[in-house]
Amino acid sequence: MELEWTRPQDAGLDPGRLSRLAGALQREIDRRRLPGAVAMIGRRGRVAWTHCAGVLDPRQPTAMRPDALFRIYSMTKPIVSLAIMMLLEENRLALNDPLERFVPEFGSVKVSVQEGAGHRLEARRRSITVQDLLRHTSGLTYDFVGTQEVHRLYAAANLGDRTVDNATLMRRLAALPLAHQPGTQWEYSRATDVLGHLIELVSGQTLGVFLQQRIFAPLGMTDTAFHVAPDQQHRIAEPFEQDPDSGAPVRVIEPRIKPAFESGGGGLISSLADYTRLLKLLAGGGRLGNERLISRDTLAFMTADHLGTIPNHSDILLPGHGFGLGFAVRTHAGVAPLPGSVGSYFWGGIAGTTFWVDPARELFAAMLVQAPPQRNEYRALFRTMVYAALDD
Image 1 (cartoon, rainbow, N blue to C red):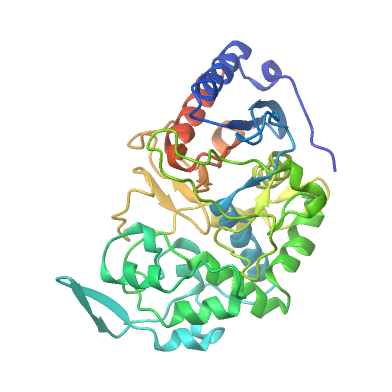
Image 2 (cartoon, rainbow, N blue to C red):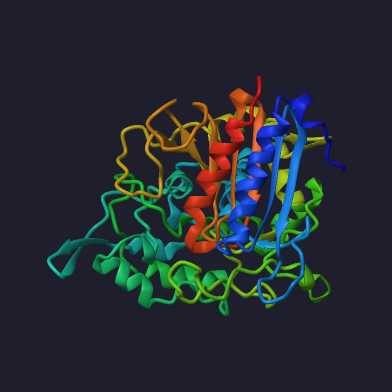
């Protein structure tokens, strides 16, 4: 299934302003703050602009290549969320299903309440639901999003251990307290890792096999997996070994080793062409070519705000945004520090990868980089300059 292409000017993009974007990325590469980047802009169902610059690996003089393989980290989450909604359409689970229906260990989980330097535990007032997991209102957390006792417990539990399987990680996670009562607060979390295991339990397949058979193969996503095969490892994009700003070591997952833990929240490796296929599916209302993975209405439901009045006290979710079922969703034309239309949706990965879909402007875009400490800076640069290049 080939991607459809068009000229930038035929898609309402100003070639001169796109040159500004390319120049801005090149300046960061020349300053040795960004190793390299690949980027894509699509409009009205067609790819209108791509860009490839810098080096594949800062330790070697190899030029960045358009088919480079990147650790996409949390850009795994929308894929796993899509898989869950496909199972929902097949009536194999429901959004209000309690998590303990599938993973009984979560039936006895308590809630951490911070008290001074320590904490106490209290009973849950209700179960975690599948909807909670999709919109990050489960009460689960990540160790890096806070400094309370529950975050310390998460860090000590070694939940990023790639040497044990998903079921083992879920048992470790279920033994920890929640950071909040379910449904009471948005907090970025390991919820999508739980969804990944849920897919395994419902489908009877490993997460990797399910995603390959039901999403990657139908869409022609030949480069996306939880590890990179030996004959393709020469395509792996690498970050700087040290943060160019602070000098601190930069640590990323090793994609050359097949993990036992297939992280639904952040484990996939992918290429720009592969993720473009996914974005074309989303921009096309759940269909790519002859393949429909999800109905247009289910996708619209996923990309609506599901938070309502549920508070968010994190700076991970931008102002002016809510959260749907796997995506941040723009709810205000202003307020946010980045341009975009109400109804646009996006997410990114901790190493710097980013994407968004803007239905109002018939726009979809992605940029893949491996620059974890500078991720917010380059996401903002890319988003701002893409909107500046729109000419109609």
